[in-house]
Image 1 (spheres, rainbow, N blue to C red):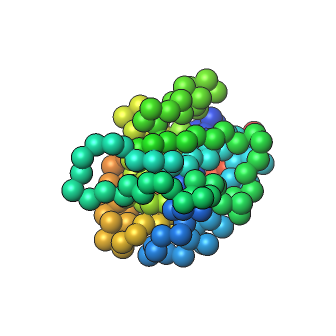
Image 2: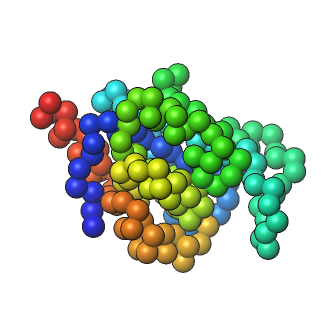
Length: 189
């Protein structure tokens, strides 16, 4: 299924587009992911819709078989990439788990502004993006996933999220389709 509509009160959530995460090897060039994410952010700002910039500054302390812990984090690791052109009006969330809703005030922020739908993009598809989408679904938000503005460390994990998980959580679409829906909605208003 492709994206069909955007609610009047839709927010953009960009996941972990930060120096540390973008330094990892990925299956798609992160430069393209950032470029498309920036285009989405600029479109949302142009339409006076919220842009949420999320970074990760740690991991859950639970015991796992595979860990991503890195103590201490290298200097600048959590800094959002300047290519996003972050604005003072953007809402910033720092998380310490995979998902942007867990132990943060993201849900309260979105509810405060009557947001009913979220568009999600970022890195990594099967970690931060999927975890945030799952939580958004459980919280009752309509979801659109910008599939050309995300990537993962393995193609198998990326494709699993795109083909098996995301269609069950919401709608998927290309950046250009999402921006066209935003622009179309403005023309109709």
